[in-house]
Length: 228
Image 1: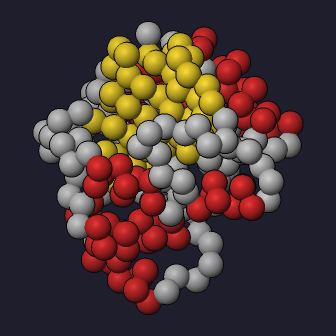
Image 2: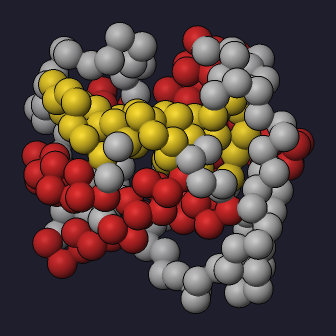
């Protein structure tokens, strides 16, 4: 059993523009069967560690998958891997579900909510690869504590990562790079690679957020860490 902490503050967006009829259909018909059970924090009572009996092969996680293009790309490229996606933004979830229908991938499972709730119930050392692609930059200095690369997120992330697990970070914000390099190593990860524009991972799929950054003149940064 695992004890849930006190109620957390959540600062990100939950909903955006009005959903199209097709997106409402995806949410109604497809989200339920793909949703991980036993993650949502109904109250502060103890919850069980997540049963990963559904997982086939290595277990990966994408934190905040946005519109889902990278998540579906990786699922299609690595059919022998089980990939989890955590995202609270309903519009992004609807976009992902449409892409899953189109690609026909069957190795994806979703948590439509705060990734911290998923960390609460994942077993120790269960993940072998984690992706953090273009996270919310929270640009104001007083909001930097809301970023993912802070102890509140990185401590639980380190716990659920297996030794030598890979943690990838992509961002177009130089100050996010700074904070990542400062905060991630003390959490238990070693930096093994850092590159810039045009030097992404071999299996990288450029997302719509990256394309927007490039159009607006912001250079991508790609950082790879390994769990000690």
